[in-house]
Image (cartoon, rainbow, N blue to C red; front, side, top):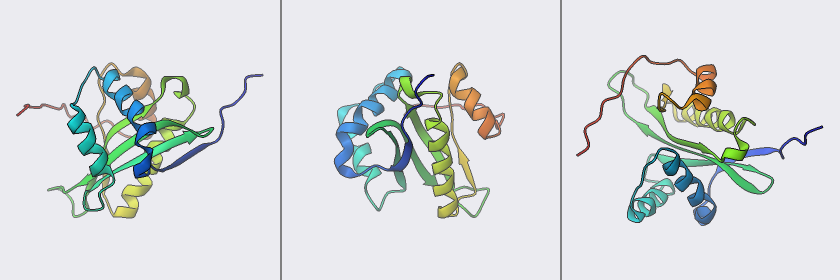
Length: 152
C-alpha cells in the first residue's frame, strides 16, 4: 500500500524563509522558461513582506518542507467596487503535484481574497500546461479572453 504524503499546512511565509522559498521561485521561472535579475528577485521578496504593498506569499508545507508557493496581489478594477485578486504565481515541486497542494493554495488565496473584500480571483497559465489546466478547470471558469502584452 503506497504511503500517503505528510499533512499539508498552508500558511504565509515569513521574511526569514527566503532560503526555502527561492528554490521554488527559481523552479517556477524555469518551468516557464523565464529569468529575472537577482535584483528583481530581491525586490519581489521585499514586496511580499512589506505591509505597504498589496502583495502576499503563501507556502504549502508538508513534512517540515516547503513544497509549494502562491504569490498574489490585489488591484483595483473598473468593473467592481471590490478589488480583484490576481494569483500571479503558483508552483508546486514536481514530486508533490497531484497530491492537493495546488488546490489547497488556490483555496487559501480565495479565502484571503474574500477576507480582503475582493470580488474576483483570477490567474493565467499557458495553453499547453495540461496538468495545471486539469485542476483549474475544476476550480474556476475560463474567461474566454486572450492575453496580449507589450513589453516596455
